[in-house]
Structure formats: structure tokens, C-alpha cells
Length: 91
Image (cartoon, rainbow, N blue to C red):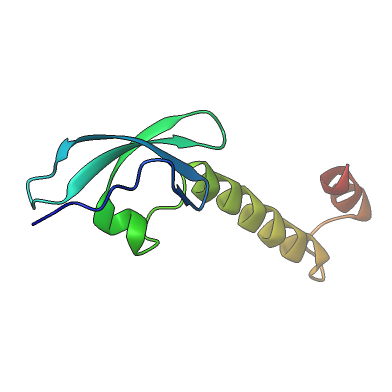
């Protein structure tokens, strides 16, 4: 099976740097540089099918965003919290 060279291509927040071998399943492994500065090794299948879009920083950001929404919802419910709690969250 011939490999498709992904060097220099961007997938989400990842830029492919170089080939670093093959996975046990036979997929080419690529070292990628994330926009946040971290590196991550990802197989070609995950990159090309949009399975991996970052080093994990995107997941962390989305988790914080979701947690914040849940806190706003909880505070906005009757008896959920005071207006001061909501103002503290916004700051």
C-alpha cells in the first residue's frame, strides 16, 4: 500500500510535520504540531476522517465552555443562586 504524503497539510488545529512510522494496524503515523504549540502523533486515518482535530486542547476548551453554560443554567433557575453569583461568573 502506498502512502499519501500529508506533510505540511492542516487538519483542524494540527499541521503535519513528518512521518514517524506505522501503527500496529498498518496506518502511517504522523507527528503533528497543534496551534497551541504541543505536538501529537496521530495516524493518517484519524487525520483524514476528521477524527483528531487537535492535541486535546480543543476538547479541554469545549469542556470549559460547556461547564460554564451549565453553571449559568443552574444559577438562572429559580433558587439556583443569587444575582451576585451570576455576576461573578460573567467577570
